[in-house]
Length: 277
Image 1 (tube, rainbow, N blue to C red):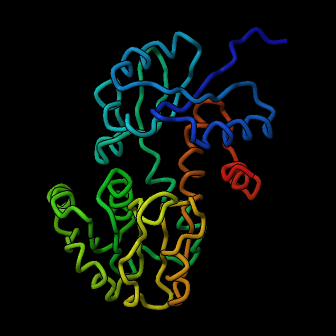
Image 2: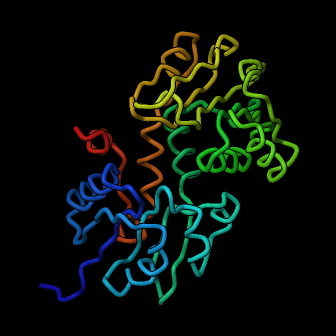
């Protein structure tokens, strides 16, 4: 038997009981025969700094960060990756050498999901349309621009948030008023719903998609339900659709590998676990 400490990791948020991350990481620990535990950590904003500083002393090697702490964590971390700084949020922490390292793997998860769900997709083939201007949209914009998408067409229900992102990301981002969102599809080859519209318990996504060209790659970051009305309508119009669950799965891979030393596999079993099946 080894006397080495058992590595611990978890997900920090509030609320956090709904998170599927503990089930997913627990599954990966089991199938890889690894020692370790991954637990939900419900932490209030006022306690965040103290908790983060305490975790390494309790045997934690890292943690995921979710709503509402993804932005605040940047003021606590000692080392922040360029992509986390650019996105303005972190979702993956590692504790090493007495320091807190903050990264953002949402863009990686988004791109992996898109490439695997639509293998023929070419980022440079045309403009991308993004609905939404929150933290998820920031990660998507960053990754798409890095991948070579020539133009981002951005529409958000609150125009000021879109304008702020254009100011930040530059002239490759074009802002559309929400009432004109249905006019963004001309020659677009990628369309992303980065809003919560269409999610269980939220308002419906009502932007008309009639302008979509057949073959457009369409993805929805919402994964409850897995097959959203947005994706169903896009498929009816001949689009190639990619559901949002893969982003959740692939964004988790880099953290797990850093903390537990093994790269986990995203497969049908992992998808089923994340869906609670």
